[in-house]
Length: 378
Image (cartoon, rainbow, N blue to C red; front, side):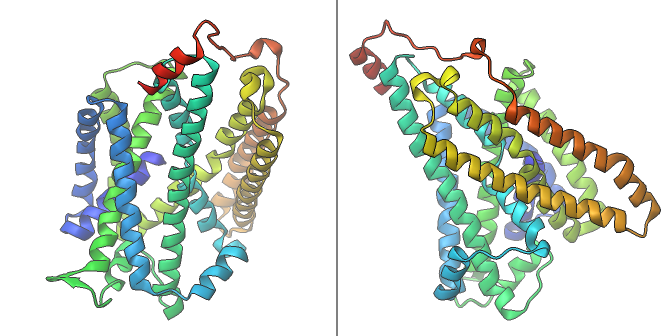
């Protein structure tokens, strides 16, 4: 789902800005493998700087788009503090959750922290926790801002004018005549396309690194980076090309949303272990979460699970109510048992009893506080 999102987002951006056909754009996305490998040669710090650069470009584009859209401030405040959700918007809402808090990024942030650690002393761990908190807060709040900006721009440009948008290409075309042009280019349209390309490349970097850590750490699959990247990218390119050829722009748009919803459905299986690990005194020692942080985290997890469960139940109800007998049989024989098994697994990882031998808490007490901080600073 992550790779498909990256491929389709970049391909649509290339199509909008440079008029490159979608199929060719999808194939060209395989070349970003070499961009990642080139940057990785210069170390993790350069890679982080590149990711923050893409994030800054996306944020700047949507700040400008907000200026062009001229949304009603009162309506924005009402929507922010008085949220409204119904079954019709639940599917897109879950997609927004998946797009904002992508599950693979939990593994990525954890792995990056491990790579940056030069000492296991308590001061070094405490300092790394502090800087990782800042890093995560900036990245996630930027993601929240970007997704909120997209909603506000869509509401101001389309919903308020009673215009239905069924593809990103429609949205691009409807952003003309804002009164801001650079030569023959409409600024709002150009920024929209650039934001899509930057978003696709930023997601590519994050997804590739997360996949690398998961494959090497969990599955112990080791392969040359270029081979691994090309193989995983082809697994996204092939279905993308098939969908584009079969359904065109509208199918691509629906696949893009579906990928985000799939990420949302996967989210609890990353969030719950994360909360349990970081709240555990056995695993984390004195660095375990404060009870307030744990409580707020569990509230967020429950909200995510509730939204996902509500969406799944809605799908199952639609399946059983379908007039297509094949669809109805598949819902009863395949979908429903699968949902039950997955829910039981979720309950298991939530309430599994922790053992004392599960401890991962390792601190190097031999390092002096001064030396450890010097190592960390270097």
